Image (cartoon, rainbow, N blue to C red; front, side):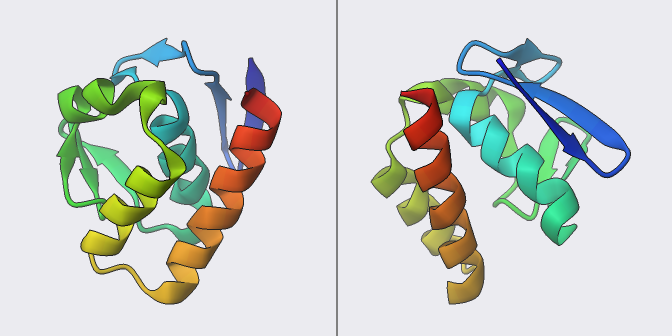
Length: 100
């Protein structure tokens, strides 16, 4: 398990991490990491705002099996800027390096 302190929040993230939003794995790690870094994602009413409003169950379905390429494609399809995609790619690379 990895603990990441994000401002006033501390999230415990691992491929088998399970909280109120279900088994989110790397997808959860990426979204939670960027909640405080970019302040564009938030958990509201079982939705992830700013990430194409994926529901918790949809994130659970993605789980830790999502590939970097697939997730980057999903991020790109949501119209995020190239800078944001670059930051997501850096985070993905570090996650896969430390968690595989």
